Length: 451
Image 1 (tube, rainbow, N blue to C red):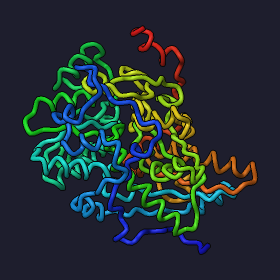
Image 2 (image 1 turned 135 degrees about the vertical axis):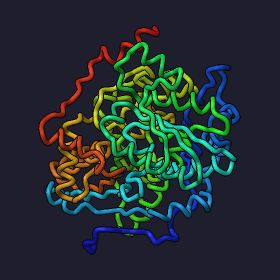
Image 3 (image 1 turned 180 degrees about the horizontal axis):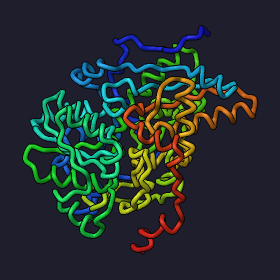
């Protein structure tokens, strides 16, 4: 094969439909539960919180393919299709027979994959007559994406940013403000949920669960306002499948097919996006690709969590979701991969993991930065701390192929760049970062309180 760095689809081949894996799952996810009625959630239960079309997408388990609106697809053309890159220099550095490919989602205007769903969610809210959105953000990738998308479709946005990331990543906050969003450090005194948490723990540095509670509370109290979520839920995973659908065609252009597909894992958005389009062939018995979710050792819901119904936020405002969870009151360590500091996994990924259709591994913080720097020195791109988890697992699998003397084709999603995370790299290079050893008693204490 000719040595070429990029395989880029023509503009006309940006996907015209999203792929809904739930329609093809033998064991569909258990239904979400309305905590007020203890009955399975209906789409109309979500209408006060989400745009109606998004609520319908959330519960759609029949339609395999859902059309991408022309207005959204037109905005995708700003940066899609994104490149699929053969990591020749990384392969050389590892001296591996494996072929390593990565889908480069860092080329979007906001520097990550999050814009794929942000544009869709902003559009559906706009056509419904919504004027304001609220959301949460961990490391800031989702907040910046929704800030850009909101400005694109003429919406006002309030973002509750996890306090530790608000302090660690000031330039993500600046990006959101540049695109017109209001950014509030969470927990805050502006909501009942925030005030309660700060009263109980004045020095609490926040979590995604806390920020979600605050954003939902504000949305429910503000006229013509809805809430938007950047991961976990089914409709978000649906929008992200443009990643894998493009990658599938690009791999065909390279005359290869992945033996292993890897994505970092927080709530599931980028892992779902890269993996679900390929996973559909496994579901049909046509392929035997391995799918690996790479999560932080300090927040290991898939590898060490429990499968049960749990709230998606700390205050208990959301529906009950069937998920692998560390408990909605679990407070993760203040690692720099802020986008992965979420207590639960989305219901689709949770069911797939329960059925052994995907794998999960946890990686400690120091190993992820070591992998990110090795990748940067080989390929020239500085990855986001979240993406470093996928890179660490890709390197591990490539070295394993070397030990076994077999050729493997590995595909991972480079979910974002790390140019706004250089303070984290500074700390790593100075030897000031550490791993967080998560003990069983930390994992079990909230569950034990309820038993």
